[in-house]
Image (cartoon, rainbow, N blue to C red; front, side, top):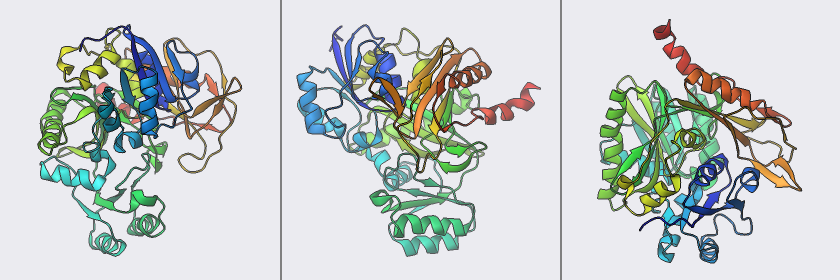
Amino acid sequence: MIPQPNLRILLVGKGGREHALAWKLSQSPMVEHIFVVPGNAGTAFGLIKVSNHTATAANDFPNLVLLAKKLHIGLVVAGPDDVVVDGIEGYFRESGIPCFAPTKEAAELEGSKTFSKDFMRRHGIPTANYQNFSQYQPAKDYIAAISSRLVIKVSGLAAGKGVILPSTKEEAVEALENIMLRGSFGSAGSSIVIEEYLEGDEISVLTFSDGAHTWSFPPGQDHKRIFEGDRGLNTGGMGVYAPTPLVTPEIMTDIEERVLKPTFQGLKSEGRTFTGMLFTGIMLTSSGPKVLEYNTRFGDPETQSMIPLLSQDTDLAEVLLACTEGRLNQVNISVTPGFACNVVVAVQGYPESYFQGDLVEFEETPAGVLIFHAGTKLIDGEVRTAGGRVFTVSAVRDSLESAVAAAYEGVKSVKFKDMYYRRDIANRVFLALEPFLA
């Protein structure tokens, strides 16, 4: 199929990831319009060729198909984890509309951590030692029997918050009770993974796939914990920079050969050929890279750093459409030299309870800094908070130091009550490289 200059896109989601995708997609000469369901205040105004549609729910797949037909949509792009895991791709495949998302079967790689860990074991993909449990007592006995530090993961989707890193066995048992006895994660915690705690630096690798060909962004590093110094509860992510100097060309080759190729080949061999975006969370350990998790869609906030790194002549709409048509190897994808950094601006209380509805005020944004809306709504012409993570502030510069500084300067241009952000994004890599820069 030859791309036409009147492509209409249905973009499903409402976060910073979707604002970043809409921003880049709107620059494509082949795109006529992007309809975002439901979108946020950032996709409601300020972008050419972009508008929100709030009358249809993002998880109402039959009515999304009807909407897509009514709007003459030529490409659907699925953002959030739940719509991907719940099988949005299949509904549009049956209707003949291209959808950038994996099949429901392939998306089980994210939807079930017990499945993904067993998948890695079957295909020899390096990961932490683990055991799966669906009952409380055997899991408690397992915790009592092991002496090393461990990690507890709920198997189902938990908005990036289903990983618990207990410091003691008492904390581990308490977490187990909360998940399996008190139901703190609902059905997502009906089964769990208990695995060994891995020491090292965590990185994120995002890879396009059309089922036969792949292309990976430069690896980035997220900051998962809510507080500075990597303390506190896990979140969906508080800031990402890319590319990370921690990953040398040799390490990236190792990741491609020992992780990415076996993953895509393993999925294909099991009848789950992967088309879309695969996000692989990897720990760089002293014994080599090991997979922490898979996500079967664009990461958030990884996307808000990766997408701005794409070169001006990379047409994201053409790339996504090519993935759905098995011709990724025929399109141009390249990144600009330099580094991107983003800082997530949240509301105090996130990732637990927090207030929504506060007025957001804006000051002039520094040149070259991007403000991607996440938890925002446009109400009576005013931008108000509508989520825990409210903005992602992104910048691309020639050096990592200047990208980080620019992102933090950009944070000053948004203001709302009880705003919170980490002030140490990328500090860990600066400390790691300090001996080599002295």
